[in-house]
Image (cartoon, one colour):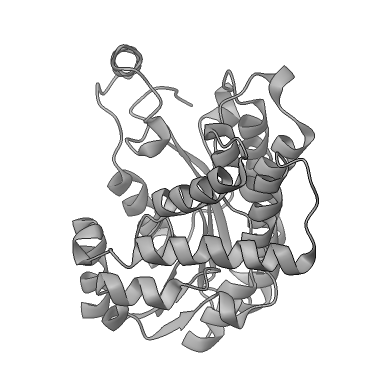
Length: 324
């Protein structure tokens, strides 16, 4: 491994609350209802796409010039909020990881579709850790298109390892899932991984039979999940992508594997009541929630030479919640 590319929002720092406050303020000024469901729909889309979603409840149309002005107004509010960020807003594990990677002599880059990425890195004191930064001012296509990551890879000299870990899990009954809800989950959880694999394949084939693809699926792909049929279906399809690519890319020395996390103690579980969390712990043989390090360390192993003969595998990391 020669280099590591990081996304920014939700990986190195958390800016979702600032985005939420800025959009909520704009919606309030325009007299548009803005609830948690609306906020969830804005994740993983471009600024102008998010604006269109916010304006759905306005009851009037806007010219392109007016939309540009509204997007600029939102961004001004957002920048005022992130201007208050400091190094204290960076999780200790993040700086420890970045320091350890630099000490190993690895090249580091940030690939973010945010046009405020450099400003955020400066405010949080993270800029010195990175050899290259590619942001929204340098790309023509936003995520899930992999353009931003490819440009970062080119800046660092190529791609050896691809980890697809983007995912959203909006809770909803099947009768409440709209076409847009279904498409959004599939676009982020499945399409993004496909686009990234397709774009990275030529680079991985040049990596001297050391290419690695690691897809983060879910226990929901095996066991299903209530109130999230779109999530479970997307993660099951990601397993199919893993199996097919393992066979297709194997002759090029590229391994392709899937990690299936169980209940990992992140914000994805924040919706659960204390009673619900207690039930989950009781049903988990190891009696604890997983930690992000449990996933990261397995990914590092699969990416290393030690994992070079493992491909086409799905690996449970779930504390014994399901076996086999």
